[in-house]
Length: 287
Figure 1: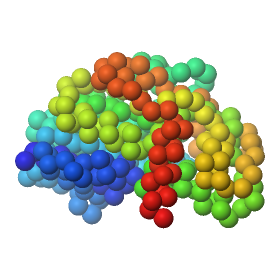
Figure 2 (figure 1 turned 90 degrees about the vertical axis):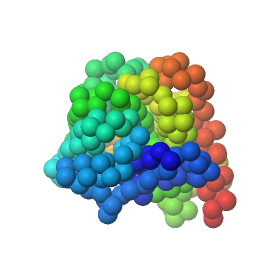
Figure 3 (figure 1 turned 180 degrees about the vertical axis):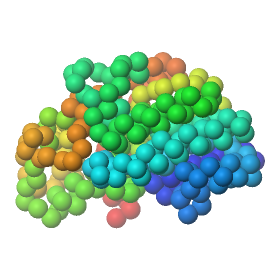
Figure 4 (figure 1 turned 120 degrees about the vertical axis):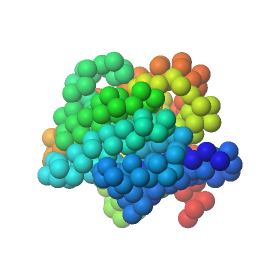
């Protein structure tokens, strides 16, 4: 049976992949986390690949604490740049196809219109900078690569904006949420399905792709719809970014164009509100 390696195996996206592949028998999906493999240790990575001989490697491991990265740049660089580079090198040496998960934070958001894969990158945070350098490392080291940029990822797993809003909405009478940062929420289950489809179809259409759900929203819009769908009475109030200062800057407008991925793989991408309802239904079933 062919081995597929998924790093960051206890994280949000990997957990979504677990849900998608639980009934698939063609591949052996090996979900590993730092206790199994330190992706920043070259010898450990090389030894792991030589033993496992994965046909695919999906790098879901990442330092995603955006604000903390501003004061912990060394760790962010190690996980987001060094790790992907070593995994990509090992993939090249073992004939492994490589999928790197990236982010809309590689853009500054100042363009004010939809972001394409060929637009100039200009991250405005340490997190965004390290993720971009991770992309570049992967592209330079292994030819058989997919770089999937996504945005505003949430799911029924792990910690994310959706779960935070549900918790705070049940605890408070009102919430202030930023309304001048615009992008698209992405359901982890949808992205996981795309990744598994790439593997099942043995795709060779390598390159950089954008994937988020369809539509446009601010964080305020996202929060309002969450409260509405869950019938939570907490009042959500819009505020500007300068009223909610954070250590890291965020892109003001990072809606991503999905024409390339839709055309290349002949897929339809769900509207963000439809996917949110799907996720909330799963959370209801888990309660």
